[in-house]
Image (cartoon, rainbow, N blue to C red; front, side):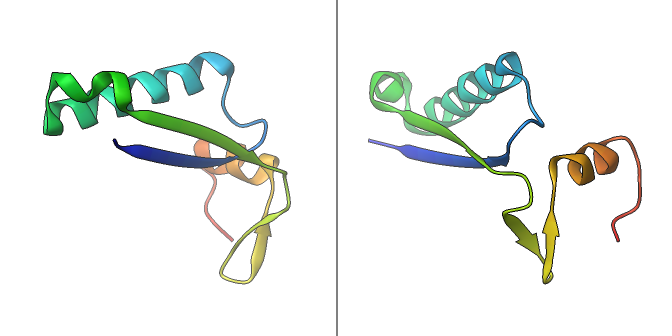
Length: 75
């Protein structure tokens, strides 16, 4: 029974985008394990509060992620 846990910074993705993640991740697992596993494939999307995620000793905020997605260079 596959269990996928996706952690995201809050406020970056819409509800529709998160639904798409769940659908596509499930489809990916089914493509590997077979259709019989679809009903027992769990995908959990968890949001971490803005500023409570760190990379390289620096906190990352929702605004930072949106700036990166828009093409800004990482600090």
